[in-house]
Every structure is written in structure tokens, then in C-alpha cells.
Image 1 (spheres, rainbow, N blue to C red):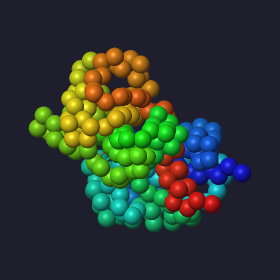
Image 2 (image 1 turned 30 degrees about the vertical axis):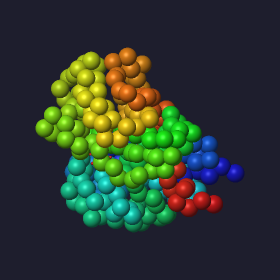
Image 3 (image 1 turned 90 degrees about the horizontal axis):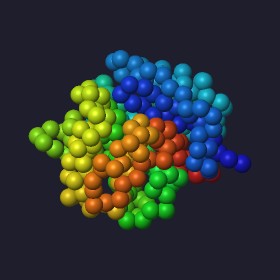
Image 4 (image 1 turned 45 degrees about the horizontal axis):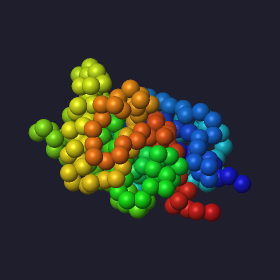
Length: 250
Ligand code: BGC
């Protein structure tokens, strides 16, 4: 019997959700979404998650939530692109009480990376793999021999005198109305910075922009191999559910 777990991905502009077949590494049915509340307080986000959960088909045990901050044992420790009232909040406990089921609560890029490493662009990859998600900020997930080093936060490395995510996120592309060459020049600066520190074997580029990979791939420059995320905007939802399944295998 396939195990079905609800996954959620809290982003700067929308919260996405889906029912995930965690034994097949894929969504069952549609990815659904709702606007991120403003301000995105814990109570507001929980209301949105509960509403999305009711719209999804019945699931088995557990739920997984991908969240845009450092998360240690379910507790939110930073708030770069989310309301400050999240600092110190027990995300896992809040979701468990909103949904009435055990919840796994983890960093969004870590979740996306788990999906890509188990079932997507990084499947079977050994060596050092860096998953990068381009959205409101830049999320990073680092895998060594398939094992995650959680909460790496390399989107906050300094580049051209600012946080790298303020230089090269997808949000910056939209806000400054950059075309592909102008934006990819910034991404290349960032890849070079990361490469100097990590010497990865593979970069996986995620976020909504990964759907347009063919358009900008010829402009990318790095000594490491570069692949687009297989699950594009679904990675966080699928990875969150996989993390919930891995936390309680049955
Ligand atoms: C946060 C990270 C998050 C990334 C992508 C950054 O601003 O600090 O925790 O993974 O945005 O959402």
C-alpha cells in the first residue's frame, strides 16, 4: 500500500500544498495554493495551512511543512523573509495542533533538496551536491554522499557588499526587471562564490525559474555540473512530505 502524506511549502507570496505518494516520490492530484497572509504571523499561516489541508484528499499519518527559515528540532530560529513573530515559535507543534496530526517542520530548501536527491535531479548522486532555490530569497541545501547537512543558509553569504539573495534571487530579477542575461550574470557570480567554498560536484537549480532552464542554461557558467530541479515548484511540498515519512517510517 502506498503511503500518502500531505506536504506544505510556505513561501513569501504563496503557500503551496499537495498530497504526496511518499513511496513513489510524486504528487497525487494537483498542487494547490493560497496567498501567504500579510502579515505572515504564526496564527495567519496556520489558518491558511488548515484551509489547504481541508481541500486535499484524505491522507495517512503525519504532515510535512517546508518553511523559509532556519528550523532546529521544529523551532523557527531566523526570520529573513517571514514575520518576526515566528522567532522561537514551535512550528512542528503549531502544525500538529492545527491539523491534528504529527508534523515534520523543516527548512524549505532542505525539503526541496530531499525531494530532488531521493526522486529527482540528484537521485543516486554521490559527492557534494548543492541545491539552490531561487524565490523571494535564495535557499540552499547541501548533501554529502546523499546525506543532508541541514540549515546551511548560504543565500546570506556576502556578495558585492550585500546578502547574496539580495543580489541574485528570483525576486530581484522581477523587482529590477532583469532579462535572462542580466540575471544569469548575477547567478554566475553567486555560483562562483559558492564554488570557491564548497567545490561541489553538482548544483541543482530550483524555484519557479527552473521551469525556464532551457532558456538560460547556455548562459550559466560554473566548474561544477548544473542541472535544473526535476520537480520545479513542487520540490518543497514533495520533500516536506518525504521528510515526514522518513521521520516515522512504517
Ligand atoms: C532564508 C532561508 C530560506 C531561503 C529560501 C532565506 O532568506 O534565510 O532559511 O531557505 O530564504 O526561502
